[in-house]
Image (tube, rainbow, N blue to C red; front, side, top):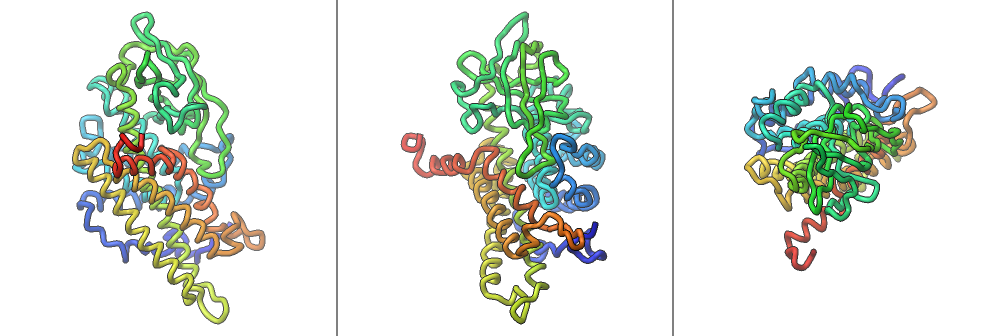
Length: 416
């Protein structure tokens, strides 16, 4: 199978235009070092299998285990965490984690999502547990000894996580807890060793550490999706799952706070993933416009494409700065950095869809093609187009993010 790029430069891909035109004056030196380290890993580990991941069948090849294990071996899961659980102990872990997500998403949004759920969602939730829970569950997660998952969404509850909407129930019994319910769209669930589950306890919500080996836990058939085919998702069914008291994560009734703080962090990660995909689509498009000749000259000589790409560059710069600022606020000790997290998520994911659509248009028929029949050349942007859309939906739909931003403007008394 051949690729679009010249064989001598296929591994490197197109020019990284952000390296030349994005002047990062916000990120500290340790974050820049993380970016270079993760980029090197992504180029070596993710890029060679990105096309296979993007076009696989979730039910037969839905989780790139070799990539997950390689990221563990390279120490990437240590980036968000403190040294007492085997982490890197960085001064700005949220920012470093978001940068890692961007670099992974540049080649595969599926891999970025796996990293996000393992570290930002499951890992961050476990990090809010007590000392014993952090050592028992978080430390092996950081080492990559098992895959982590995070389960809040249900068939009838996703963006709405109010107690009245959550149907999964945990009741006290025999000195512990019994869980019953069904979670939906749960990333990593098919291969997870541990799932952090949000459940209703009385009139409030609580979070629980649920090993997938526990009797009564079953995983449904993997979903087949438009994109992110390497981000395996499936239902999680809890049927009289008995857990000891040590499996309650945090305080009883404190689950909503854990979930919302975790999802806020997740939105920063999804914003960074949007930037990574948008940057990849931008770089491929810029290279194509410069070399593709039509009507007597390169497409880049046409004012339409010049103006469009100028607008997209400005938006990319703003989107990256937004997630950086939100992450820095979280690193400063603010657990809910609004409105920056909401703005970063809404803006970055919308940009990724817009830029991916522009890329498909610029490449024409080849942009719409997964694999060209004449020479087996792989289309460089169609997977980005498919993968980008989910960013506007999960981790809080973009309409919800606009509502969050509006609350900051007008106040809850008016917006609700």
